[in-house]
Length: 88
Image (cartoon, rainbow, N blue to C red; front, side):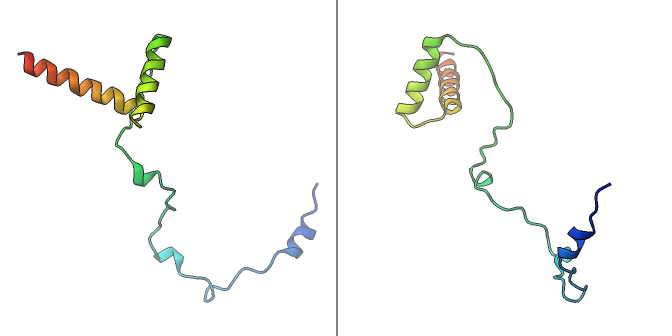
């Protein structure tokens, strides 16, 4: 069995209740890592298989216009809906 007595001797004593901060009464705040500031509301995953030439063309368009692939798909969908509206 392991002997933990040696380890215990090296640890400092815990602070007294009077010395400890009253952090339990304060609200819990998660550290901000920047992702929450960039939240887009996109919570559902979409995966599909496409032809290699389409994938390359889509990625090149997105890179040229500094867009994410999902943004290109959203713009394309919006254009299709507008075209459908105007044709009816």
